[in-house]
Image (cartoon, rainbow, N blue to C red; front, side, top):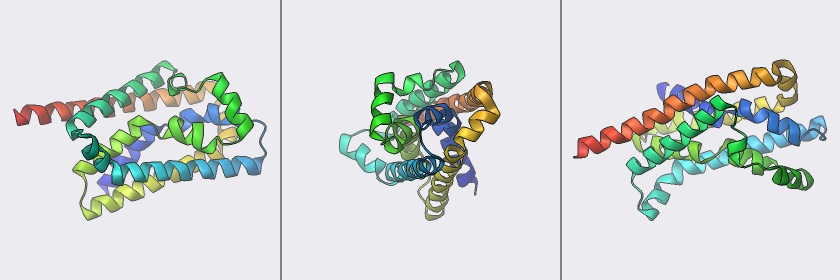
Length: 207
């Protein structure tokens, strides 16, 4: 159960679905309530698929490219920490690479459930590297089961948040979303630093 709670909290902090609300509201402003529900569902399913593939097949990608788990922890820690600082500075969406030109294109094509919402807004390099590293240390049968349940739970929460995106935007307002995102940003920084510390300790122990 500890595995479930830790991974759920870590993924929620890194994915930060609350920070995606302003983008979701902007991209679906002309959509009907039913269309928003469909986009929310498709987005959460896409995120689930990306995270599950990263969790179970990520280690094989590392092996293919000859990347050590220690190197991944450091790289992932840096990315996660950078995302956390972006949240604290209120520049999270800017660092996601969603330009005005891209927004207009996806609005016209109606493919926003995959890009930019599922990737890179939600499931980005930070969450992918987190899952790959997490699998290396938690690969017993029970840990895999609870980890998978945590990924499914996060995807379900993402669906609920996006499904209520326009309502939450009205209730919380811009300042409320920013405040929550900054708290999540602080936790995200802590997670990233912890990954870097773990990698450094591993290197020291191998010397």
